[in-house]
Length: 139
Image 1 (cartoon, rainbow, N blue to C red):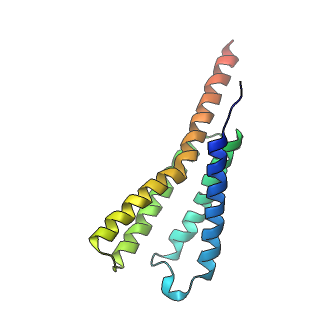
Image 2: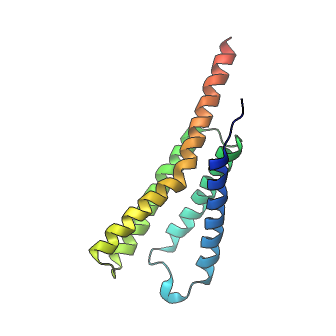
Image 3: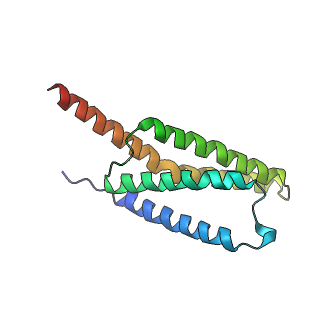
């Protein structure tokens, strides 16, 4: 049985390119376009986004590196909370109409769930692998 993960591979490459572009642009932005949130939020997001990229890699290529599901749930919850704070600071800074805010939130939520979907896939892969090994252990 062939395990075709072409969609996950495309998503992984897309996330890798987007992360590389975001890292590059964050170092070359003029002062007027710098984020309004505190630097510690950006520093907190960086390792979480690397872990999400690792999960995307693992989901795409059927690899198992960090197999503790609790760690991945922590990554998901932490990433969500920190991103929520980033949006809070952005909207508190002003300069947006209500329509722009609604549009921004809608697009952000769709892209956010696309961005974190490999983590859910990787969690399900880990759980499926763990349940299979538990069954084989008792046979």
